[in-house]
Image (cartoon, rainbow, N blue to C red; front, side, top):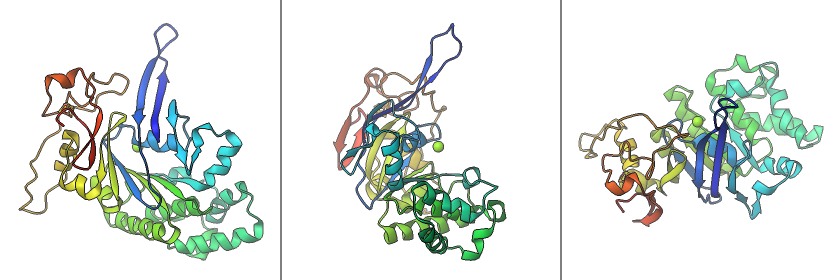
Length: 311
Ligand code: SF4
Ligand code: MG
């Protein structure tokens, strides 16, 4: 993903100039086959927009998305539809994306019909997949409302897997679930990754969840990546002040934990009017004069990619 931008235009009235919301403002990312890249940040930082733009559920304003050598940002509608079987999304709230009037069998059949899988194969595929996600063939004739939240997310995952995709973008897939159910779904996702050699982009505001599942983690702030590194490195040696504040917000269970507590003050500024210079400068405990005017560039520091004038 190279120089990805997604700007939304908000027109207040014909008399006033349009407002541009820079939800994603120049992101570079590489995701290796079989890995899980976590994307974290506060709500409103642009994480979901990144996910949707990569799959072209939203059209990018600028930038390239290269998947296995193909620039998918240039594919036409039909080519993109064919490509989509390799690229799937799992959403936060399966209740909102599972048609309440369809049985589970109908919901799982839909992607197979769209990609012209013959009817004989469909039945076998559906019956196999419902069991792989931990439900039974008997569940196929029921409706979404007859299931718990965790079961519904299993159905959402089964639907995403029906066409044996290679990349899954999971946008807050466990945020709506109870903590005890969260770990079941995370374990299921890990098992499926091994079984189907899946690559994940895992989006969450919850650092604990991201730590559980990711190999590498990108931290986003106001439409940009401020730090990107291996999970161990990020959690044990965070460099960017924003990453440090996010980590210090995780409750300390170990009394020997020497992490300092940094309180993040102020709200996330509006992406329609982001602060000048470093976008984090209005909330940064280490802010310097230069931060107010000059936007920091990404640099490799101690094995992490970080955008901050301290380095
Ligand atoms: Fe803080 Fe300056 Fe670094 Fe931004 S560039 S995170 S304001 S120290
Ligand atoms: Mg979101």
